Length: 333
Image (tube, rainbow, N blue to C red):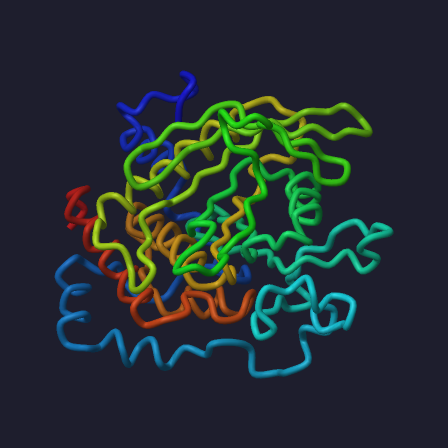
């Protein structure tokens, strides 16, 4: 973060303190998507699962999507085909983000899904979505506005290996035109700071019909390789810390939006790297609360809300490595 909104020093301590204020015993056993079951796991147990190849078997047992077919009816409508980056990665009807219908989009469709998991009474709320296409940027910013999004976590470059991963939907800082307009929304880049493996950009979003303005934080992880997963585990953890720091900051502001709005996460398809970010955050919360660390169960919860989350074994293994590094760094072993 920058512009004096938050200082780097004390971030980790502040995060730990804010979480510890919530009672660990608040686990809501009867609530859907609540993490419970296995006892807390230590660093050595996680390492043993990796070394003994148990992670492969564990991952292969998790269903990639729901068993019942035909639950993506809106996404499969002919008029929405051009709004999907990939024809085989679609949101379920009951968890999809519904936009207010417009003349240009009369079904209110966008390839995005609500994701909710509760840990110790704390609800982790996300929207997982694909990287915007040139023709869906207006829908994307409409979603940001209507859902009260304050944080966009982008886990991809705009282009990798000569292929578009996400259309650039926000203006460059310092360019001749640092403002872009999509439908009713004008987006202005106010500042950008680079922090090694990620960039933090402050955006101003203005509704052209009402004149209302909001601040949106754009956090782009820039160190994901074209193939495989990042080697710099500490760098990835610092990116997750930045998301947490900005989340605390935005939740404490008095802007007139819903309390604790979801964090919007996207990569290209909105399932692989996006799933890694969401699963890692939730599992770290379990570690911090000394709660159950049932990684496959939580991933299954996520996949019941959006298909194919954490798309590869490499990504699933990476989540394990991130948790091991977190335990070693935070001395929660």
